[in-house]
Image (cartoon, rainbow, N blue to C red; front, side, top):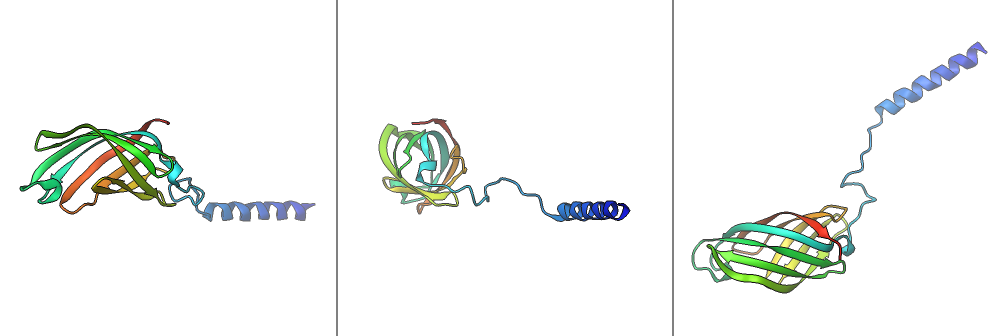
Amino acid sequence: MKRVGLRAIGIAVLLSVGLLTVEQGYADDNDPGQKCTLATLKGRYLFVGSGTLLPPAFGVTKQSLFASAGYHIFNGDGTGTDTVTFSIDGVVVLDMFKTPVSYTVNPDCTGTYFAPGISFDIFIAPSGEELTVIQKDLGVVGFQAPQKRVANH
């Protein structure tokens, strides 16, 4: 009996040491079980952005500042609409303008977003609750603050 007890203690100690050396796992954005699809983006997302326009972007002839605010409605299938107010150097050039948009989503939760004449890289939370955006058109230095889903559609 004494040997069985010692063996049990030895096995328990070995298992404990083995468990201590194994790296702890965390559910994070790199979890292979968390994949994004077009359906990850579904609903209404508020946005605000600003940046600098360099000629000839958007028809400007001098370096100009821009600001935008509005919301995206993503349909979960790669299509959607934007409602946006856009100003250049403090002058509103689009006022609550509605336009169709399209988007792609990669399994790693990156993607692209297209509105007429402009394109963005997007970075999406695996839950789809939030995304960040950077504009990638020539002559535009612009980004949008993190966008949160405010309604499901």
